[in-house]
Image 1 (cartoon, rainbow over the protein chains, first blue to last red):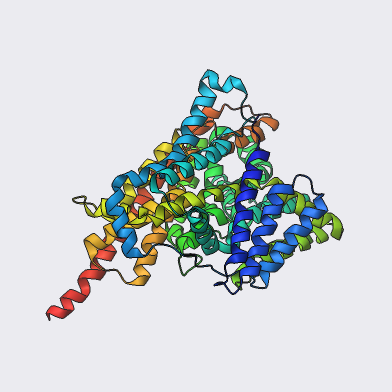
Image 2 (cartoon, chains in turn green, yellow):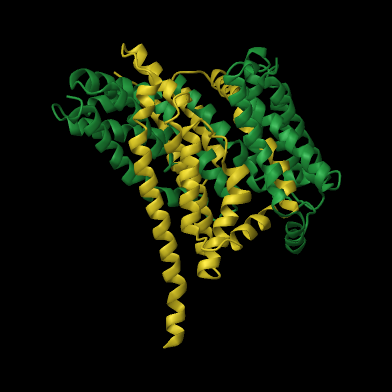
Amino acid sequence: MITYEWLYILAGLFFLAWSLLSVLDTSNSKRWGNAAFWGLLAASFLFGSHLSDFGNGVLVLAMVGIAGIGGLGRSNPETTSLEERFNFSQLFGNKLFVPALIVPITAVAGTLLYNYTPFGETGLFEERRETLILFGIGVLFALVAAMIWLKPPALAAAEEGRRLLDSIGWAAILPQMLAALGAVFALAGVGDIIGGIAGSIIPEGSVLLTVIIFALGMALFTMIMGNAFAAFPVMAAAIGIPLLVEDYGGNPAVIGAVGMLAGFCGTLMTPMAANFNIVPAALLELKDQNGVIRQQIGTAIPLWVCNVVIIYVGAFLLWN
Amino acid sequence: MTNYWPLAGILIVVVGFALRFNPLLVVVVAAIATGLLGGLDFVAVIESLGKAFNDNRYISVTWIILPVIGLLERYGLQQRARGLIESMHGATMGKLLVVYLGFRQITAAIGMKDIGGHPQAVRPLVSPMAEAAAEKSHGDLPDEEREKVKAMSAATDNVGLFFGEDIFFAIASILLIQGVFESAGYPLTPLQLSVWAIPTAICAFFIHGGRILAFDRRLGQLSAAPKEEAGQ
């Protein structure tokens, strides 16, 4: 059976290659910092399952230390010029899109086949892990196809990958770090404290105000945690279920579904949702780290108001 | 009496991000402070941080796509994406991003949320196409506006994903809602929940789509303004 562990070894080998190429890159004055950072990440992928929790914790502190003292620098591996790229794009034409589409098609079509045909009964993949595993397989297919077709120099794929990785830099592990922070928050009882505060400021008797505080709590707590999943159980237990459903007799399906979406409006407005907001700013090489969030606020706020209205109308006016 | 001290971690995050310290450093300091104030000892905090980081490695696995994207960019993928838009009659940035918004919402709503995404679709395809379309209608863009076009491309991917995926009933967030309500004594089916994602999805399409079109018009006025001055 193919499990996440296989993917971790694959990713570990990729990061190991990037670490070694960083060592050899004498044009980058911070090459040792880059090599150590990606090397530690490779170690986490290759050996993390066998290290103690404390060992993994020390590894995290070492990576953060390197990033914190500004030890990472952008590399500039040899590549094609803009003019060459333009000429290649004329030469290869729209077929260039094909390898790029192999990855999502493998992941999506594979997942559908695995779930809705006898293929799933083979038990080839770890349960509920098939999409990401198929994504990894798609990457390998796409790489092989592109190498055979384009015949690049031997190290070109690794070097082009390193160029993109170094343009993202430490932000590449920020989403994973924030998930770890969420786990520590949960352990320290942050959710219960927030739920207690939210539950204690509700004015009695007003359904609309209670809906607003529920939706506001979802959005704000999601902004703090970077993730509506962490906010939902807390707000549902503090306000959604005891007050909106039980005291005021609202429709639980609407309160649950649209309450979550009010949280998603918070996701659009927070740097804590790094993989959606900060990583793309790095990938698109924006000067403003918060540039993506700035374009989203104007959508998030009116949409949050819509969610309040939908809960009020759908769960109360239409339901009772 | 509730111990409110663990909330200091949230304050550290907010202040640290606002003062633009390295976010990784801010996150680790906040995690350690929260753990200690929540009553854990130092070693236990490091252990819980290490375990949580290790358990969430699957999040960073997705970077293995970078060699594919980088290799295709070496051979002109972004230029090809631009060329495709330049050759289309009547293609504008507004139309392009609104179509992408709808496409992303509908595919996510039928469970295909892995079509799209920032490294695999926005950087190599959507953003260069949007830029090319904006230049086609409005001429050369000032840097500031070019940045906004790129940021709007990423924003459109996010909005389309967030307000499409919950219409699909077999998605993690729907299962989470179901689980929370079930343990409180309210059994709901995923389908009951996912139909209620549809009104918000429609609002999201019109609000964000309207903003995209307004942004495109604003770029048009911006590029028209200097010409008028020159004519006087």
